[in-house]
Picture 1 (cartoon, helix red, strand yellow):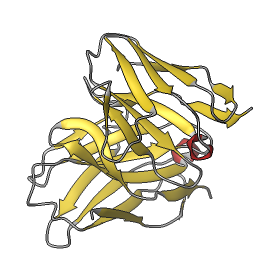
Picture 2: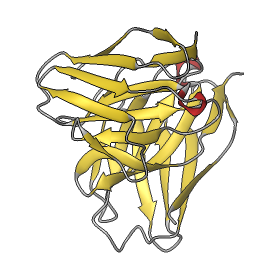
Picture 3: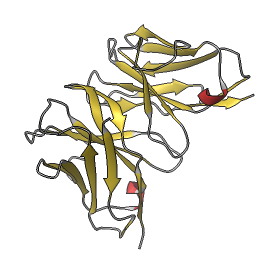
Picture 4: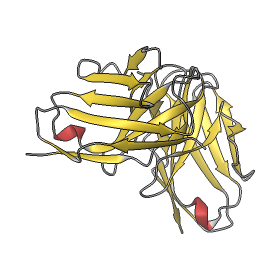
Length: 121
Length: 106
């Protein structure tokens, strides 16, 4: 059974970099053609896709976040990570990691439980 | 970016009744449309993909229809566990989600 678990600091100061890691169990991120993604949800609001990564290193980012986002993968640890720089209060959200259902089709079958990150001084 | 608009924002339905949720895309997404259910404190759960195909383990009371720019999720007879927030998502282009419809008990 595939499981994803987000981890990282719950509090980040404005202008700093938000860093989260998604640990995958039940499948190897380097043994399939699936894409792995990050999606966020501000408190009480809807979902926003941030970006996807393939284990080969191919990445795709939402255009409005592209200048601040980096998604990377560590196949040796079966993890992938999100870095979001120069954060402001508007980046406060629950951050989810997820995996697409069909390789290359950008809808998500497996989701983590989410990690709340608050941007505040 | 393709903008997804869901209506209504809140749907009040009695258990056992039918619920109909709408989703509109700002441009055609063909059938590249998914629906998710989200309960408090949980990640979204995939219900429907390809506009009308139920995901694994999803009860038959959930059905999706539509193509192009207009889509519908129908819950034929609402059960207690179905009261939640529902999101549509297009994947014709880079993913974008609708704002959600909260289905609450009337």
